[in-house]
Length: 238
Image (tube, rainbow, N blue to C red; front, side, top):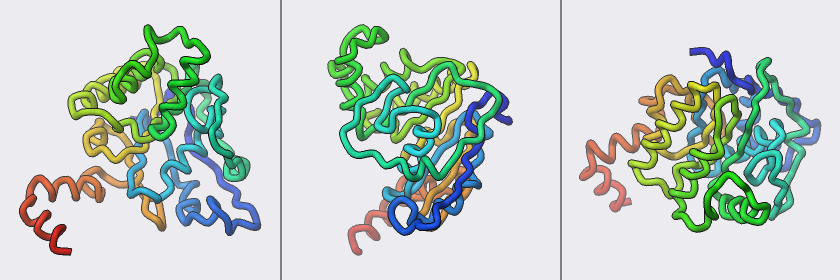
């Protein structure tokens, strides 16, 4: 189905004349204009270091969110953030405007939880630090994410059991039915089963749209379960 109730449609990229330094040296940037967010949920998958988090950070900046996580209201920063790539891009939006937005980053979630505690967020009954990692993310998703919202999730499966990932999928389904749009970078083969989601697979050279069964992630997990003896014999003999 077409994402008629979405908020971000695509990104236009105008590379600077001098573009030899990171992140402008990433080959995947030549495919940035090909990303089309026309489904309620879009997944970014690929090996570590292929640029998924860089693009997620770019999208957060273009949509006015804190680059280290949170919403427009979070202003904490623990490292020097680069805005060069953001300045070289512009978002192409749908006519709709989100009432809510949020950028979840697994790597900086601890800092985000601390910021929420220091600012006295009225959303949560208790400090997110008092939950386990998986529980705190589920608490965030269930109480802070709403319909008519634009949400970026960078490795949301971190700390989540299989059963909790399935519960997350149910929440995602409920939110998309209320006109929420998600872009999710993940290593989870479970989340990729979300119906009608679009999948972009990142490599060091390119970004390409892919069907679930054609992705490297799906094929590697299938080999582990279906040919585990061969897989581990091959792995340990290298």
